[in-house]
Image 1 (tube, rainbow, N blue to C red):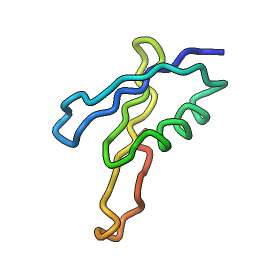
Image 2 (tube, rainbow, N blue to C red):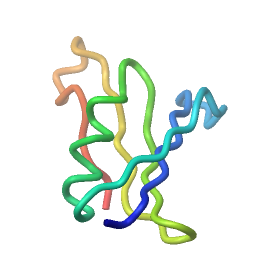
Image 3 (cartoon, helix red, strand yellow):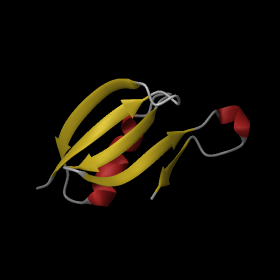
Length: 70
């Protein structure tokens, strides 16, 4: 299984934490990233390949709590 890196960042792109997990594919990695949001944005990488960015939104904005940016 491919190893994915999850960069947890503030909206200002300041790195908060980084995690690595094996996931079966990009969709599974994105699902894992949503669980890591917790008020932050999450960038998903497989090696040097950018996979997705999960953007966290406020519940008051009317937007979904998170969304995947391909």
